[in-house]
Image (cartoon, rainbow, N blue to C red; front, side, top):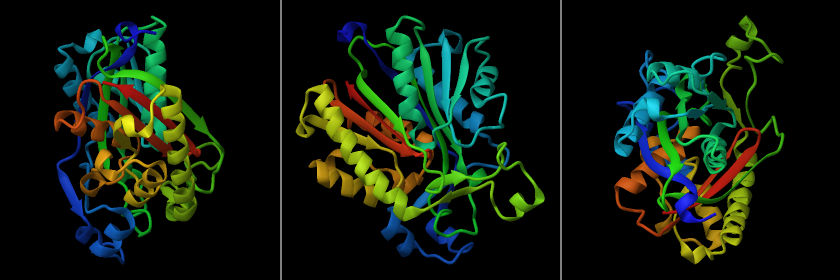
Length: 328
């Protein structure tokens, strides 16, 4: 498929809440300190939403920015995909809240529940919808209020998570932000990363609430090992399928989970950290929102130029993973 007819990203928008929570702030809540957190994660601070600021609210802010940059109206959108692990509620889904908030009409509105890998899943789906001429303009949103599902008594996990949203408008791009190839996958591994309660297997009860079973639980070492291996494998596969070498990748935009994961994986592939976008020091781990927030920063800081190959890499709950190779 030629560049003139391929689906790709026309515009990006992003939003993060105003409230900044530093490592020193967290040290007042759990037994930790700035040095301990930074050495293990690369995070210095993160953004936390207001109690009355919901996942769909942040998504709507990001969408408005993306549409404004594309000179489009909400009614120009024909399909909404929202990747989130912290939806407004079980149903209606968060995409429907976005549809309602922006008065988009009765268009398809779908949530993707693969946690941190959700945005790359969504981008592959959106490109397929556009490339098959099923829809012209598809919104892919990553939005999270992880502070609502974080256990702030667990110092191993509460230091990681944050809130925010990013949105990409996928359409016929005439060679701008063309999605060249994507691949997603998943393998069941409940113990590595989960929210145990709240579904049909374990409905809400006094016990599940008292035991913080509605919050994120993870096994850091298992996730670290998995993520490093998958980032390395996906980088190699993306280059092979795209017909390029790692040296030709201008920028890698990975899920902003842990700087040590990213450095280890990129070192094995031979991609220097000068070609990797890192902003988790300022925004923490925003799950499905981390890649579009980082991509927005890269585009508007001049880190991406016409003709550049850009690789998006993510892993998440499931365990799930995925990548998108884009030519700008």
